[in-house]
Length: 423
Image (tube, rainbow, N blue to C red; front, side, top):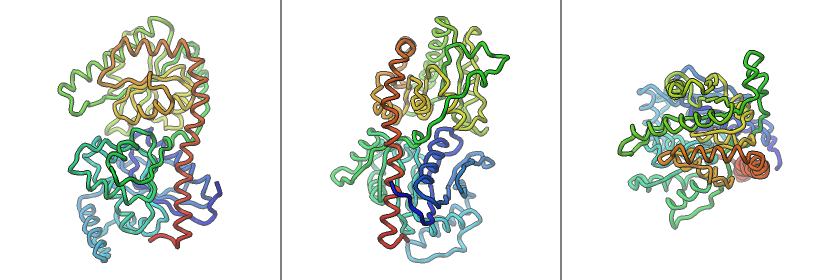
């Protein structure tokens, strides 16, 4: 695809903070844009519970917070309402919101970041915020691009007219798996529009495996020769369940029993990787609690939560097998050619496993049991070479699908410039 030579400004909304998976997706997206656009800068609207945190990128990125003081949030809402009527009362904007509006005015393209499903019932509690950031782009007359998130389901019908109207505002809609595309098609009904099913943007980058000898060092060299199992565990809340506490206990006990059974069969070492970090809501306390349930004979460690998404992907790549209850660790493992069991709590992870043709190793989190998971883990280890060859065939196809998302975004940019620009 041709590279765009003229300067480009891209505004990115709906990036999810304090999550290594969303960090990896963002880094890959920025990298892909930089390959196609010789002169590009980004404005990133970020959300962190811990406001002292920032993401580090190789590309030129100005980051602006969307977690706003109440006074500024109200001022932004009033300014936007006035903007609909043709007025621009900038005195309503504050220290954080003035540069945000300026970014919308100056940008060439508004991108809703890979992640979610932000649009749909699963995150309905803050869905309106994500839609508002998209609508601001429409308000300023900018081309809107949905950059391959997941979406849906849309069973809260009172919101669906609003959702349909906003989905139509996107110039191009990309979704990262077919289940999300089916949700959107059902939402739009007879008012169909082209949808592009691509793949998760994190697949756009490749990482070499971390050296086991370097990772463990001389003092723990014996661990390098064991069966190495990476684990991504989630303290899932089971929203809507009749007895979520019982389901959480069953999940914990199932994981513990599966790891103990494996340790009884062969020498192994378990690496648990935190995906949430930042001190306000992170995985480490839960992982420590989970490991406290393991028999003393089980060898384990929790990977340093300061390891960024690049380093985590190198660690996933050095394993023999993975057990993943989070979406992006499922991708990290398979993308590195490491077979994995997927325990899914949302449709996005099942959709990814279906893309690979490996849904037999995907298990709904509400229905897991030790026998099924242990048998699946044994099967992956017994047929590991066969599984690796399968991934060597399938992952390159998904990488190309992932890169197609960026190509579609650049095509939209070039089309709008040919038509005389935006805004």
